[in-house]
Image (cartoon, rainbow, N blue to C red):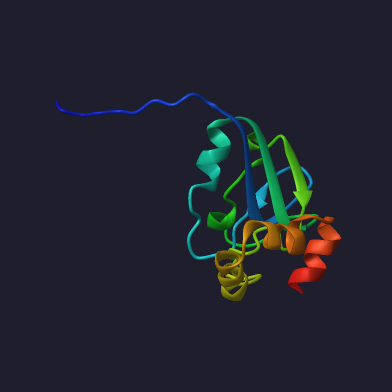
Length: 126
């Protein structure tokens, strides 16, 4: 038939970031395009979900519930966890940060943004 397929080994781990999640690992995506995040989870041995905000209960249209608890081994609240990319509608892509990254040497960028703690990083991008 001429059909070609590509097989890959299972991923060791997958980490995705969504807008909202509950503590059980159900995740909600509020943006316009759900990407392939659910498929990354299904293709991995260990699956982790970070989110902008942990909520007691997810509410909203069912089509926004991209991930269910059976697809997740762990969940963590990580505000700005998708920075410098977007997590619509919570925040847009940080174009100025991306430009600075592209124009900086690795050592300069690492020292300014990555050498410290998460709190240091959040303060640097604020």
